[in-house]
Length: 389
Image 1: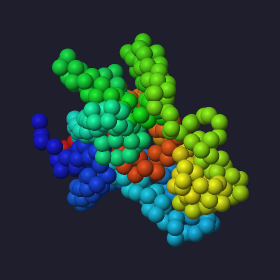
Image 2 (image 1 turned 90 degrees about the horizontal axis):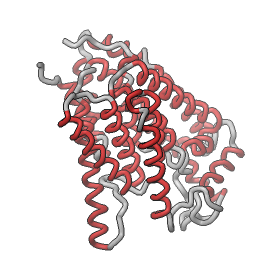
Image 3 (image 1 turned 30 degrees about the vertical axis):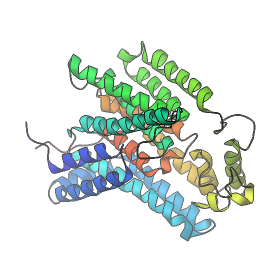
Image 4 (image 1 turned 30 degrees about the horizontal axis):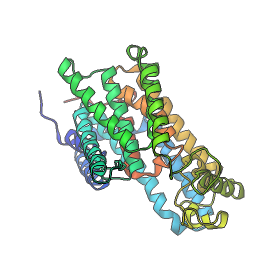
């Protein structure tokens, strides 16, 4: 067996770093860029470009970027919008990296790297909650090295990945299965301790997708894991919702409905191209009095309403096109390919879409990049690949 080459090792470094911290993630993406450029000096260039040309998700990201530029130009100030325009370009760069690199190194050992990254972050988060309980008698929200909401979303994807591996084990044997089950339970505990209800609902949706795609999981995944996760979400809401956002309750000072209605009013005033990227925050005080002591809120806590407000119908159409491509491609891979990675990609998209219902996960750099890497890895069977030398 040949040792992993530099590009495969760089892919593993990215898989290890993305669940942990943004600084490590950017360093790993830089390393991956250098390793890929080194490989593209020879015949591999054509193979990598062929994989990129065959990936419609890249074209959908480009359309999304163009829609964002249009919204920025016709919005309330291009200079203020450039930061988010750059973030859109970052998504194109990272997805292109993953598509090209995985075409050249389809056998890169990413499962151990992902498992280690998720386990490290989960262990730190669980420790945070435990120490909070010991010192104050209250469970602190697990967050590891990121915001608690982002952490919960990460652990939701990690738990979903563990479930997919258990449904389609990549390594035979009781010991490997026991290790995967233990890791999955650790991720699930960290997700619960993050107190992120949307992550639990998203995991439930992903579990249902697993049940639909994997016959061996149908007996228990939809009923057991889906309802179990939903029950955990309900109990989580009852236990921790006091003093936090009231998701669907009457409009009070603690209701997300205020943020959503501001976004809707912005959209009604600027329906085609929106107010421009990052201008939800700058114009917030025109549509609402200070909310929870803040005159300006950065996001609408809902990607769909947020995009309507900032990018209008043009940007919203580009967003839905991108999500549709990701969903269809992930589903095709999950049905056509028997690997756990393909199943993970298929289940991750509906989970990601639900997470964006109460947050703007697509605009959270580290989490969006993690999601795109999982998706690119799982859909590799739909693209041409280089021969393994």
